Length: 168
Image (cartoon, rainbow, N blue to C red):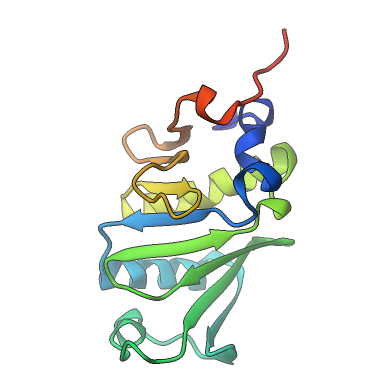
């Protein structure tokens, strides 16, 4: 049984309604958590690319990336958990793991299942919640991985986003 059903969450995956790039975060993180993400990416079999200032580079230890000066070039880690879906981790701060995904790549039940599997994998590895929010409203995620339930759940009042409910 999937964590979420497309008919229940389709509006949360609508790029016109929600914007194309929701914000995904693991708040209360550390350099050790970032390193766990790096290790997960290396061991997962996913395609990935680490870039600094838009130039591909070897993936260093997380502590090295996070200790760069504030005016250093932007560093990101681009991960493809499945072909056609790219997750971009932004290495800005040790205390929050911040990443984006393009909703246009996550349409239909397959897209929902792909996102849920990815959030579950990251959340399980870290033992922490992973939230998805819109418009920089990190304090109020609309859905996310709940480690206590070990599943991805909708975290908002469905009426807030005019969710489509299954017919029947």
